[in-house]
Length: 138
Image 1 (cartoon, helix red, strand yellow):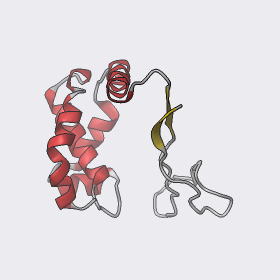
Image 2 (cartoon, rainbow, N blue to C red):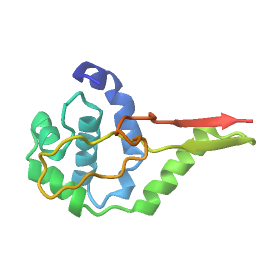
Image 3 (cartoon, rainbow, N blue to C red):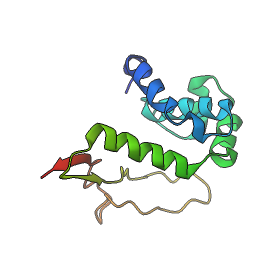
């Protein structure tokens, strides 16, 4: 997504992220979540902490601390997401299918990082699948 597309979805994205407000220990963490998610959705070439922080005008250390040290209630976040999915897509005969989004990592520039498992990669490392996130009714 480019910056314009993110601006267009910002009201809906903000409303969605606010559904998880009570899952974080403080308001600052909630704000960092919005920054991080916007960075992941952006058209940045590298979606690691430093480029996301630079693009948002935030100190990289701030986002690093958010991801590594922020306190949040994982169970509450899961429960809220489950309720949201059930509310929006619930039907007596529906089933949910959620598959990971996998991208092949092809760099050799990060120190001390080995090649990681990628469920969507074939033996040659090509991407076999894309995100599959849908609900199917019988």
